[in-house]
Length: 190
Image 1 (spheres, rainbow, N blue to C red):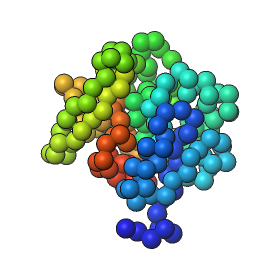
Image 2: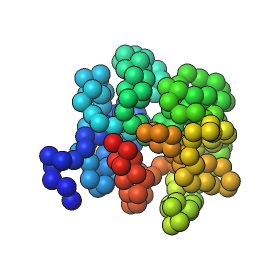
Image 3: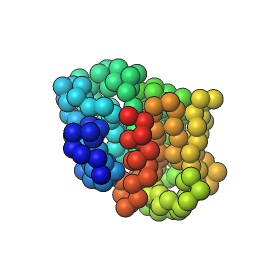
């Protein structure tokens, strides 16, 4: 375990969603964390996780708190990892319905693509040649990825974990399992 001074400071957007579960997963993976609710806090971190939740509500809160434009600028320079609703916010194109986003990853994503809450599920996917438990809760579906997007894992033939440059997105919730490999991958980008 690295000493406290050498750990990366990773922010978790703490407006909605299970940001505390991400905080625990990141700390288990070796990071110092900071819950981010202000521009000042955003400016302190080396990377940012945008958790799941409800993307339209997150957009409203980001606008209300004057965080949307600072978050766009942050994503131009530093790594961002979005899970579920966070992945929706990172996409450059959102469907069902169309909505504003950060346009940080070249992908088209469909909100609630797997169906309603009752259609949520836990599945085992292949990640780097090993099984990974994936928790899908009203999950979006990635319908298109651009040429610079690398697909790291799929479920039923559809990308569920992707990266583009310094950014990472998953349509499932890796913070809800005891497996820290996805969070470790994000830390490696910082």
